[in-house]
Each structure stands twice: as structure tokens, then as C-alpha cells.
Length: 286
Image 1 (cartoon, rainbow, N blue to C red):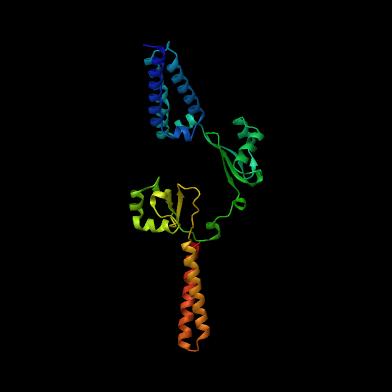
Image 2: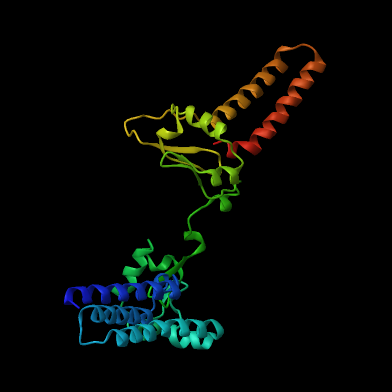
């Protein structure tokens, strides 16, 4: 068999084996890469490369070696799921480096880390003052997890007691000029409704749309094939809010203008009820 053809076949077999092992080992091997995983990855890659081009290595031997090295992480991961002690031995333990704004020197020495490296990891977490840190933990994958002191944590709507509308993931309704029927059925929208919504933005046909995506607030994002076509977006929610405020102002005006006590009371009561309603729903109409 010609040498180039042999290399092609061996490379193809090595690629298929690597692909299968990667799928079996799962995403954890990439997302939480420990030192052991790093060494295993380099070794498997080296074996696959050698198996592809070095004809002195028998293909069967290379395949067996790949199988063994691919099997090790799976077995260790399974044993780690069954025993925390075993997991601590193979992956190590997370180490606290900062507590109550104080650096723990002994823990830094155990991890062979100096102050420059610690400050680098803190800056990667957008922290520049050690005194702002309540706790910093060096994870087994080498990343630093930082918890700021309460007074240094950023404000959020929950802290301020501001009600927010619950959101779900955005759904694609049109992709590459084609209607995504599954997404439409999931949300309970019809093709006619979607056509009416995109026509509000100056688009006449679904085939003109490269991508249409709807969020949990019902707002539709459109991207057209024609990049020079400027979309005209209508803010329906802001329009509803403005109309409700106008109705409230009209009711208050009617209450002031009428001399009929009964009508005045009705107008004032309705204006008050509408004001209460607006306070509750305005956060959802922004």
C-alpha cells in the first residue's frame, strides 16, 4: 500500500477514535480541565499523531494505547462520582486564599503562588482592592472564585425591591428565510400574526428575513438579507403605557371640570384605580 494512502487511513482512524473518546468523556473534560485532564489530553494527542505518521508503530498498538488512555479519565470520573475522598485525591481540593479581606499566606505557599499571580487572578475578576474581598477560592481547575463584601457588591433590582418580569430564552421564528414551525407552535403564534409583526417594521415577506427572534417580552428582532434596509421599529409597549397615562389624566381632568358630585366621585375613583394599576404594570411596559 502506498505510504501516503497508509498515512491517510491511519490518520482517519485516529481522528475517529479521538472523536468517539471526546464524546464519551463528555464536556466536563473541557469545561473543568484539571492538571490530570491536561496531561491526559496531551498524551492522547501525542499518541494519535504518532499513530498517524510513524509506520514503525503498529496501528493496533496505537489504537489500544488510545483506548487505554481514553478509558482512564472515564473510570476516574466514575469513581469520583461515587467517592468524594477519591475525587479529592485525583482532582485535589479548592483552597481559600483570601478570607475577610486578609490573604492566607500559608495557603498561597501550598499552591506555589506569589502575590503577583494572585493580583492577576483578582483583576481578571474585576477586583483591584484586596480589602473588597470577603472570600477568594482557588478552584481545582486553577481559576479564582471571588465573593465581594456585602457593601461592595453591585446593586441589582432584587436588592432595590424593583419587580421584574420573568424571562425565558429567546426563540427563533425565522431562520434563513424559512419559518421555524416548532418555535411558533411552542409559543402559540400563527404565521399570520408573525407576518403582521414583521410588516410593522417595513418588511413585506418572510423570505426577506435572514433571522427573526422573539424574546419573553414579545419584542421581535429582525435581521434582513438586505443590510441597507433600515427597519422601522414600533414600540408597542411604550405606546400602551402612554395611552393609559393619557386616559388617567383625562379622568382626573373630567373630575375637576364636572359640577355633578356623583360624576366627580366616579371619575376620581376610576383615575385612582388606573393610577394603582399603572404602578403595577409600568415596569413591564418599559
